Length: 329
Image (cartoon, rainbow, N blue to C red):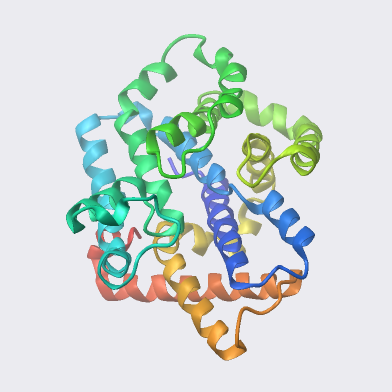
């Protein structure tokens, strides 16, 4: 049941997520256009995670049993989310206030603040993803029924229009679920029709780069801010491209991506703490944030990945069979 190139794709996805969050380490005021283009190209890498989740969900759906499925997801995703959230929850309810939080948030009782943080994922930048993916877990029986509905995937082109009309909900998991549902369904469709899709991609994958390039150009010209629908569709169309490139790379990609893939959820849960701590240390030593550049970002990315892998691998050894429930790996 193991699909090696999908596993390596997960390693690439988590690496790109770490790269995006490394942008905050630098001062980009001297090169705003470079920062804008890096965001256009790198933001929304979580789309790849959702594509992989949809692919593997369908791939394993023959033995789907809802109670067991929820139990596994609670142990492997929700439990580590609760555990790893503890430092951030303490920091932003006891020590200081979270910047850019909604008005009136801190007028609530502390337990309500904690509950809202956990239900929205606002306490750490990447954690919006967990309440959203939990909605996908809860919707699993419906997704299984859709997968087994004859001809359902013929409607996929219409589903791909959803992000145009429903924006990403950073603090609204249900809205994010609707926004990202098309990419999850794309992953499911590619798994359901794996042989036909792989045969097509083997010959024609490069044609998808044409609409991807068009969406990149459209985002540069027309999008206001970040996380526009142009960017979401761009990343959705990149999913089959990267899927095919990972398939072609085969075991040659193992050397670079296998470990990151194996530790991906642990890296996801812990990398924000490591990057934030590094940012504070760098700012103190530098006297502020250093200027951003491609080389600086590349070095920070490699360092953040190496540190994240080392910390997660070390904790995994220390925690033993408890590590999956505590740090997700």
